[in-house]
Amino acid sequence: MTDTIFVLNGPNLNLLGTREPRIYGTNTLADITAMLEQRAKALKLQLDVRQSNHEGELVDWLHESMAKASAVIINGGGYAHTSIAIRDAVAALPIPVVEVHLSNVYAREGFRRQSMIAQVARGSIVGFGPLSYMLALDAASHLCKGAGATQAKSQIQ
Image 1: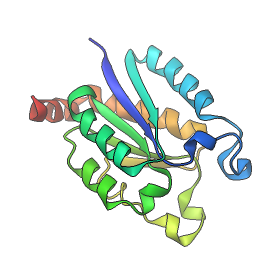
Image 2: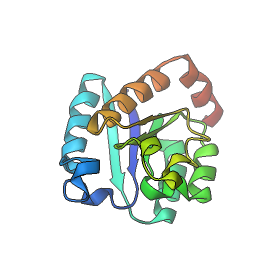
Image 3: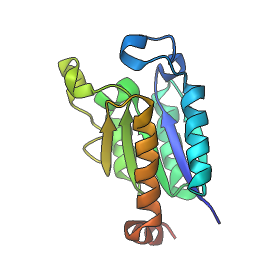
Image 4: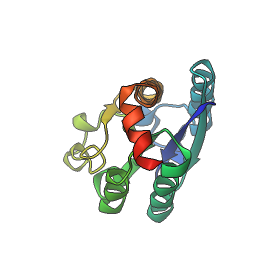
């Protein structure tokens, strides 16, 4: 059996490649997904990659991950800094969650320096462009295949 990792992308990430390339780079979300799929195959993982500009849909997907995923990687985009609903959905998960951001949010505007998701995620990886996602996948793989995952999985069975 292979483990499934949900990769959830929030608002405006559908515009990657054209949206502020000096900050977010020129890779599209499809480019990043292709890189992740290649790495996931080597790790013997399945990915379920999704993007939405709608907060409630992201919350629904987080709830769905409880039954269908071993871990979640989430780039909440702007919702990372504002959404208590997404924060609470992440807090409710019995599986590991890794937050990811392409840019270094701590070197940007003040409002980006606080993440609601970071408060309840297992960890955050920021500032490495598309590599942030790859590092998050490695971390999620380690967490869902490691000792911490056994406890989390037993909580949802």
